[in-house]
Amino acid sequence: MATALAIRPAKAQAKLTLSQFRSLSGRPVHHKKPQFTIPFAVVAGFLPAVNYARTWAPSLGWAGALSHTGQGLIGYDGIAKRWSFAQAKAAGSGAIIAGFSIHWAANKLGINRMLARMRVPIFRI
Image 1 (cartoon, rainbow, N blue to C red):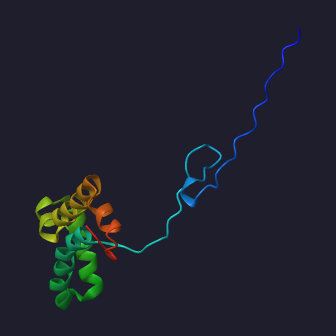
Image 2 (cartoon, rainbow, N blue to C red):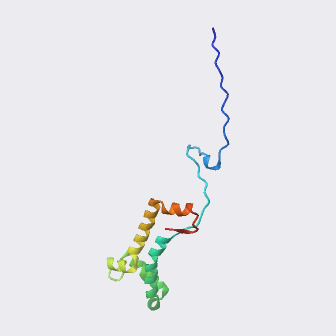
Image 3 (tube, rainbow, N blue to C red):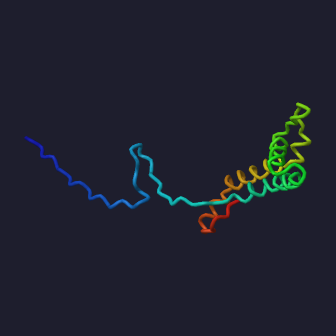
């Protein structure tokens, strides 16, 4: 008595949409358009440093003012050869750190993704 094996026909595969394609590793491949965005909190954090450079520009020239601002942002006094956190605070390092922190928190909370889904152009937090 031989038993007959029922051969099942293969299921017809549905056509994959663009978001359903998978890479060789099995993970989905995401296709998105590159977009230019400006993180507002980070740009706002640099405004005190720009103002600090602008106040030194008349006396030192722009090259000297940018050099002075750069030394001030990292907190190193090149003349006295010591670290000065008061100078870093005056140059605006705290505002830059706060701007990056706000941007990081907005990304973690999904605010920037919400703005992108609402199709708000260029602006991100």
